[in-house]
Image (cartoon, rainbow, N blue to C red; front, side, top):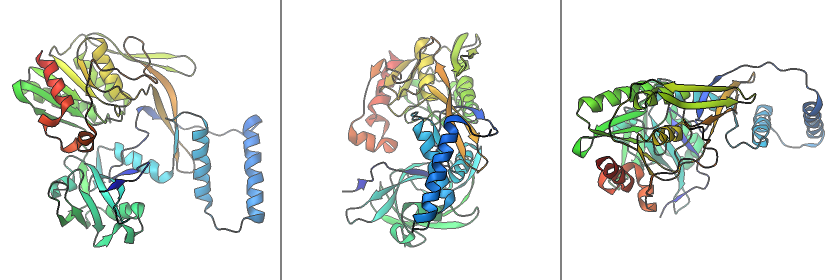
Length: 397
């Protein structure tokens, strides 16, 4: 039996899925005034701590790392789970993940500990069209070595991830224990640039078009509209939108994706700290087909508002589990030290003016997957997927 480490850390090799992904409105830059009041007290406390460290601390330390921990603690001290500080490295990975194309092999991995105590990298997902997908690497495969060196010999999880990243055009050989085959083999992958695909579409039985939206990025709305057109050209008479495990993303991508599905009216509203409200609306053109939306507890932010809008307009039946309940949007503020402070700056509201904070979207039809099926989510056959089958039933009725 294999055990997943607690508080599992996942990294998208070549395309990190940012944990701060949310309804993002942009970046801003602020200057810094001379500290006064409570802020001056914080500075005084830090200076006092530094004086003690300078005079008594016997260990070595990196001041850049200390700074990152201080800023991380400041963000956490605000008491908002969605506000965070990104180190310079993490921030750059975040920017790369939002780019139209990226360089790497295209896998998301997490650390797992074997019964003998050794570490392997479990492949959580593989990016569509990526070098890893082309090489035959699949979800739940396990990487046991990189260029012949085991994960532990490389120094553990983070060092192994760094070894996989590498330079564009360079090859890396991964020893992979296949989930489907149960066998280990060496697979050589060339790190290269590939387009990030966040929307996929295919036709199911009875002319049901299935569109999966993995996240809302700058490219999602265009990819979604293409998928929508593809399904209609192939003769879809109903549609299923799958937003399970979708962490949210860009506001404009959400609005542009919903517009062709909704009648004329509000799509989403936002309110800032000063109470200023801005509302995004749809035009009168709407797609009139039976629809269903599948969500789960890991559907966040923009994914939730996508489901809520279609539900409130009576355009779709929502299937699955109650969603996360994230109703804030974040804005990134790049800092002079290279990192970025990502803070909640707006509250969001559904077309009917409802906040989703702490309550999420309640499905019209509640269907959960068993623990076993949840563990095998990305390799489930359609016939095994109870939530998908419920969505098929909904659009047929």
